[in-house]
Length: 85
Image 1 (cartoon, rainbow, N blue to C red):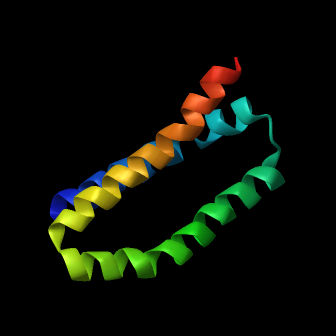
Image 2 (image 1 turned 135 degrees about the vertical axis):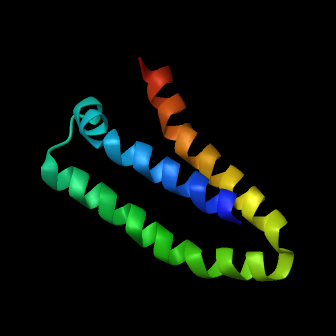
């Protein structure tokens, strides 16, 4: 479980450090970026309850699966942007 929290912290720490680059490449202003970041929070609120229920039912194996799904979701926009170039 500690590894899961560490991975989550590294992911968000790295993403947070890249926000200026993400904004520059996306070509959005501060307001548009703020709305996008707000949507991340809304998505988190919507997914926390089902994720918690999955961990309660399946235990630690659910944490690994959910972290893998988060990693895939994080990489998809990057891959899509790379294909547009």
